Image: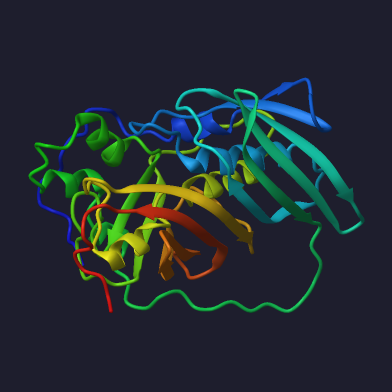
Length: 317
């Protein structure tokens, strides 16, 4: 457990959720491959490749814009095919596979430089009455106000070797306030080399309207956007690896997400995560999003590439 320090470090860029809603803003364009097409721009990022959540959310937003109410997305399954340029345009082609009475299915393919970079299937449901069950949220998790912000945590470290762009990105550049339990794995693994962690998440400020999406659709797409930020961290944690370790290379490979209940992105959500396999240069993890009163709103499963040239420092046997 990491408690918030007494002083607060001021990030060099003001925390705002605007990059998130900018990423969700699509522009209709002429379809070249399938039925409907949009373009979108990936957000700022200090790494050589764009953040994977951009593609997850943008493709989902593109699919949403082709499905009529009252149907809402209940699942999406995707593969990341190629690295995507930062701050560059991606064209999303949407194929209308099926529109039934209760369910609709869309195939979305993202293109950059003429090559496919992301592909997903998204399914939508009208919903119907039925019984309800969900697991409980983890016990004994401190409230977000009891945990450090990323900016506060970074201020406690000797991060002279950390590039300012990376510091600002982790501290305030990801649109979302993230508070780890145990602490983050930015420069070192804070806490035991265990295969699980929890992260409280909330946009830095109220989400702005997004053209072409209802507020409910925007909030669902926003949840999809942030899910990729930390989902590989339990796999890094169990290996004793931090994001700053020299020689570490990671990449999202495939992704699945189920949307169980409506979500409002104005309050804290607990993202409870667990790694369940690390082998052959890949790590797999599951994440569940709970509201502060324990309602399960979504489940994520993701596999990513993990290449580490440095020895693992805390790998479990």
